[in-house]
Image (cartoon, rainbow, N blue to C red; front, side, top):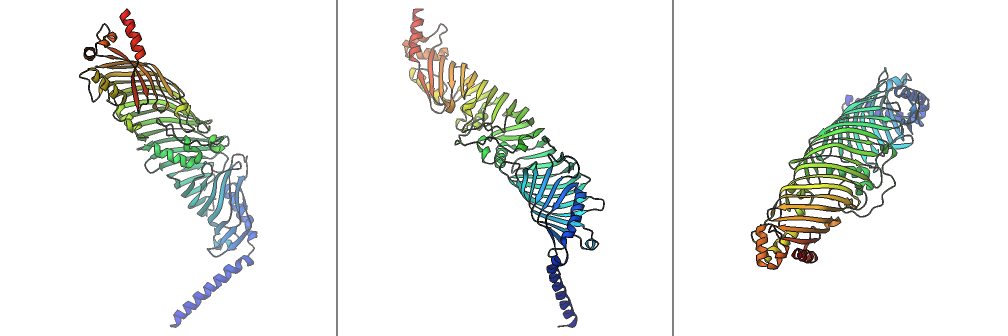
Length: 545
């Protein structure tokens, strides 16, 4: 081996040996506890908070570092401490510059902390947090940080895991966030912004960026004030697509098991097994939050519904959530209304006021109840004023209120009850009745809804061949209990009377034959019955007159 190479190898080995020996002996030679007061003082001056480090020691294994058994960023040096965010960590490593340290000047280069908890008034907001960050403290006191943090959001019921990469600078209580790239469960957030009065008891956060799920996305601005009496927030956002089913699923993941049976106001509720609900949902911090804002979406989907041009204002205050001035386009028509709910009440009470006009009823039915697709066509309008409770196995039995429904220029498909009536009329001698459906001018009814059962006293159908007027109820599970007086056109009436002359007792002066019917069973399996008692009583009365 050549002499220069030998010298190099020997020198390198000696240096490595000296490093190992130095790293091993350093904790015994240098009293790191003497550096702790200076480190605490420098951090207190930079952060304006009371800083406490646990027992410390020096290490050279990954660069010169002060390793503390614990670390706490506590109350402000001046001012009240109520409502202030407090951070406590377990094992913490603070890497410092070597040359300044020889002059007993601690200059922090990076920090790593495990088992970090952020709390407010003793209640955890973030827990099991690990932070690794490069850190630079300028002579003027500015703190620059760039790193990664991951942990659990204890402020949410299910305490979802999150991971975020960040770059920020703290100068005299103002935190400028250059980049924030965070993932919380299925949600991905990319933003930048600023926190004013970051070290006070009421910091103010302003973020601009985007929030994305797999399909849904929002772009806009969010402002938050962590006031001691309760957080206050505002949001202004736009979206190319909001998938409400996806959003509900994400909310359920954040809310934990308690939210599974209370996730949405489904127009066609899903049956769920009974579940015990907690006395209250969500930490006090979320229950005390006040939020308001506006959202506009080019497109929105929900339970098969396709909506466009969605706009709404919303607010959450004192435990009440309200969506007001919502407007959207739906299957050729428009809808407007207001939805109010109490999301932190275990029974989740809500009320809905909605009015819609010009909606194609066929696609709407196909989206809400695919099994009934094609049964009714036409242009619908309706008004609803409902209230109920969204907890429990089903929403429908809790609903009370009133409504008005009207469909014009439509068609009833020949199915179920209508098929039975058509077959009966053909057997009785009627001719020319369409077999593929019954066109009608309008179908309307006013509804009074009590515990999920809709009652009407003015069901009205007007068509070329058959008119109908009825009263009765439509109950849970589609249960039918309707009494209908069917009145046939002159042509159909003539065919029926010619085949069965006894029916002439039901024929009026206009030549139209009327027949009282009972509609029973369910929407899925209807049963049409002739009301014989009414036929006899009214027929005899007509003859006597």
